[in-house]
Length: 590
Image (cartoon, rainbow, N blue to C red):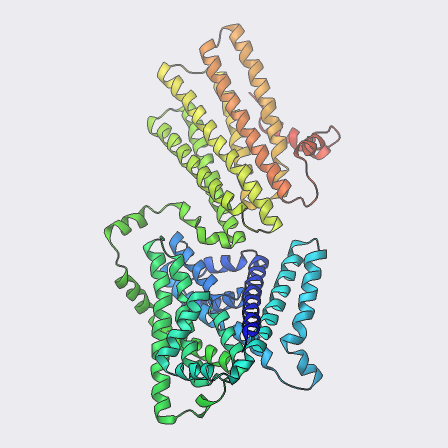
């Protein structure tokens, strides 16, 4: 094997690894975060956990990605450690699908239709279709499908290139002797673990082993311990991802390691003990790609079946390694919502955006709570309630900072067009919800000023404010529901109510001026009354922004907010006028 063969082999390896990465990325993008959501909503049923872990890993073609995601779930408190164990076990089974796909390259036949089953025959066609999708399709989904097809094509070309480049090694005695040495179970296992730890993918290292089978130098005696070691080496990715995470997240990574180490030891001891008496004849045979895929699958299935009843034992072992202390118990009790904004989720943008959306819904509810408590203070002031309003506003401020910072990080990722629109919407709306909580504090301060000065509004002013307050409460409730459900139909109902609130603001202003002239109201109370009205009107403006953002999100064509509002408020828009008049009757002033 000369220098140029080595270059060809390295080039093939590069194509193989890049193809696997591209295919996995395309599969992850096309899933749109749905797979992660399935895992997030997992029940405590261990069999279902194993099945889902296997399915998700088979789809995204990476047990490491699944395990890292699970470490993120445990770190953020979304998932318990006991739930994570089943998924980790299932991920090991799901990853075997890659070795079966790669084993197709070993098909040999003169039959035309069987030849078509060889990846080297259909991979170029798939790659060509994929390139056409990427270059000529305008739809994001087709581009992602194209990425998967191109990734698969590159993967198989890399596999064939590697196999072709290493074939001359069959005539190199040093290489043959190397694999004789690997037939030693301990050395073979260490070699497999080291290779997988370096490239951080058991699927890729199994693929490399399958490519080396083309030399005819790899026997099952050599391949068997290497495959065992590969399962241990793949744990490195999860362990690295758990650095700096919570103790429970580190325990999840340790469970992955313990499962693979214990499974490997039990399987190897059992296998070699039986082999000592039975002497399996196939062990000295030349290993094939399909045989390696079969061993890889049998090991992972049997290891899962053996250890599944002992999930509690694995959990206890992880707790014995990383002990629970009083500080951790306190942190768990004080765990806040922001743990769901885990950096590990940034590699699954669709899921990360869904997490941001659910957190923004909580932020919206806190803003609403602050506003409603502030409105209550106008009729009955209470120091504790006033402090609650300030506390809620501080919490909403933190939500804006945390969600905003996380969304900025997400915006740097390669995300789907729809997710990009949702991200932009959330960046706008967290500002609106934060401003609503600011207006709540302003209203609370107005109530406090009245309480401190011992002044009250006239009975008529109080009745007017009750009607105005009811309208503001209703527009907040509608707007938050619109945001939470992304309800475009309900969003259309917000603007007519906002117009009515503007109308109420003007009418109250005129009535207030009349009371001033009649001496029923004082200048001092007039300023407070005006402040409250202004804050109410501004809250309604933010509700209008929320509704328009949702309409914009669901509008695939070009959308201009100013044009939309102008079109909506035209005199000949009967639907808008009917809704507006209905609201006017509903919030009629006394």
